[in-house]
Amino acid sequence: PDTEILDFSTIIPQVMGKIQPRKIAISQWNTFPYLIFQDLVKNLPHAEIVSGDEMLLRVRQLKSKEEIEVIAEAYRITEESVKRALEVAQIGVSERFLENEGRKVMLDLGAEGTSYPIWVCSGKNTSRSLCKSTDKRIEANELVQITFGARYQGYCGNMCRVFSIGEPDPKVKKMMIVALQSMEIALEMIRPGVLSTEVFKKYYNHLAKYGWEKFTLYGPAHGTGVSEVEGLWLSENNPFVVQPNMVFNIDIWITDGEVGMRYEDGIVVTEKGIREFNPYRREIIIL
Image (tube, rainbow, N blue to C red):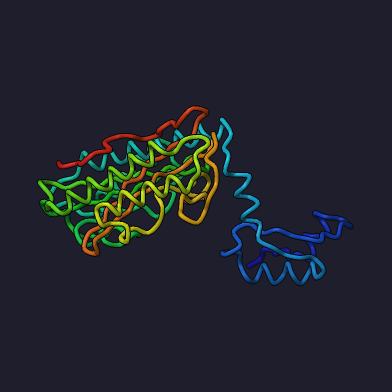
């Protein structure tokens, strides 16, 4: 209450002096606080204020060597947290318990937090593309989804696996197989010089072969970095040429409305192919 809060009438002269900007670009356009935006407009009445998100995306889409190594560590930490959750998973433990076990590993290994609100979900809770952990307890033979991501030095890791304790329903197991095959297609297709829409087309056709093309939300991968989702969607309507130093999450999500599964791993495009950050147990996991 006793702190003096400066507005743009004070800040702008201090930062810009007599410079009169003609255009101001704002990052995080969709979530920029409205009151601050109003104050900016009031104090720069002759400036055009626009979104800077596309401009920043162009800068961020190619990572430096240093950025790549920090991202690799974020994925390593994330992978260790997934390993821990799988180690302690058993019938009767709660979704929240498994999340907390993974979270502790991330923090112990140097993560500053999570890349997003992480979760573990099971059974019918898996049918939603975005979930949160609950007190529901894991049951035999049901699908369990782990979605973890560690934030390390400002950069995001992400890893998703599904498993069951005991043999899952045959239909669920078939979904696992199709999802894993779709992930392998993306891993094989993403190479420097490849058009993003070609990757999407092969991924989509594979899902269509088994009748799953209408039960997914998006293409097989998206960019990542300081945000867990950082543009560069490999989709039908977003053509771009894959280049070295682009970092992607391979992100496979399908659902039949009753259960859903997500497999997700990180890669960086190299001069000749890709480097995989976290290939641990990219398989049907039955504990």
